[in-house]
Structure formats: structure tokens, C-alpha cells
Length: 253
Image (cartoon, rainbow, N blue to C red; front, side, top):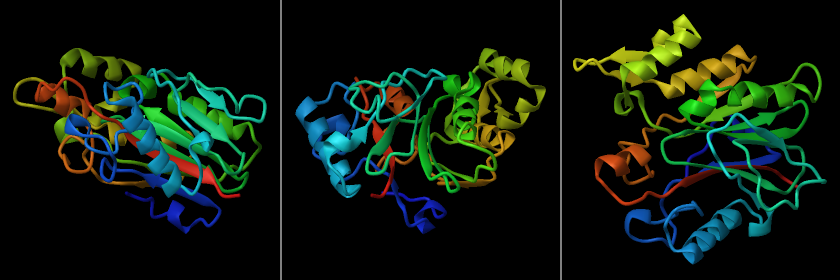
């Protein structure tokens, strides 16, 4: 379990970036796999989500997850839609107390947010595609609809590190075509590939959209086998599948 040093100081929220430890799944999913879309035993996944809910001082029916598709879609969870079973989005926002927002990752960047002025929470699933296509901008835009002078705190959770994230020239050119300054998030390798700093990229996106209070948990999900699942590591090892870690935030009742 990992925590934001800034968010931990705020008394009216709970949050956690959960590791893969202390769950019930076995094998490649060992052990706190929270990915319903994985090939893991479904009952084990449900029990793992119950463990997460307990750690967040709530029940499973108060834990809201997304059907994540690397989109730029944001959903505001309200009293009108809270009973929906499926939220097709890659970011959630709410000001409802007692419910837990969750994001699943296995190398992508989990971001949790809290607006101290308007007592509103959010979470973002930021893979390269969603980040490139505006999931961060769209989420902050929704926060700004609450009113002026937002005071947003953002915590960037464990994700793949730059040294582990090799991409090709076409990928690099795509980002340079967006903004030439994006070159700062890439390092060229000796084999004409590039190492992508996705953590730096999403941090820059947050800063560019007015978020001043940002802290980062410096963990590389690819390298830290004991604590995190990793899509890229599973591909390298030719494993059949991979688990998903969960990151959560809620407003206390």
C-alpha cells in the first residue's frame, strides 16, 4: 500500500495506491488482482475487491470502477447515475461522500485528485493514448466547472518508468507532431529507439492545466515485480495474461 504525502494530510478523504500484495489470487495473478477483465478466477477478483473496500472503510457496493478503454471520456458520478453498473470512461469525478472511486492499472498512470475548495474527488486512468488525446485536460475542465479558484491536489501513482518504456520512432514522431517541446519526455537509445517518460508527460499536462499541487510516487511498475503488475513485463516474459492494481480515493462521510 502506497500513499500520497500531500493527500494523507487531508483529514476528510481516504486514498490508497494498492500494491499486488495481500490478496487471494494465485499464479501470475498473485495476489491482489482487481481486474475483472483479466482471466483470473472471478470469485478471487471479487474477494480482492472486497479486501480493498474493507481497507477503504466501506463496502463493495460503494466501490465504483470504470470500463477503461484508453479514451478521453470523463463521467461525473451523481445521485442520478450512481446506480449504473458500468461507467464507460477513463476518469471519474464526484462530490458524493462515502463512495470510493477506483482506477485499475498495470503500467499506465493512475492519478487521483482532490479539490480542496469544492470538496470533490477524481481519478484518472492515463495511458499514453488517453493522455495524448486529452483525458487529463477533460478531467480538469470538469473540475473547473464547479467554480472559480479551484485548489486541486493531484497524486501520480506507480507506473512504468522511463528506463523501462521503449518505443519506436513512429511513436516519438506522433508526440513531436503534437508539440515540439514533447522531445523533453524522450531519450534516444543506441538502437534508434526511444525511452518515453510518461510520468513526466502527464505531470506536464497537469501543470499546463493549472494544477499546482502535484506529488509523485516514484515506483517503476515494470521493475518492481514484488509490488506491481506490469503489462510490458508480462509481454516480455511471454505470460498469458497479467493482473491489475487498483488506486482509490473517497470522501469520508
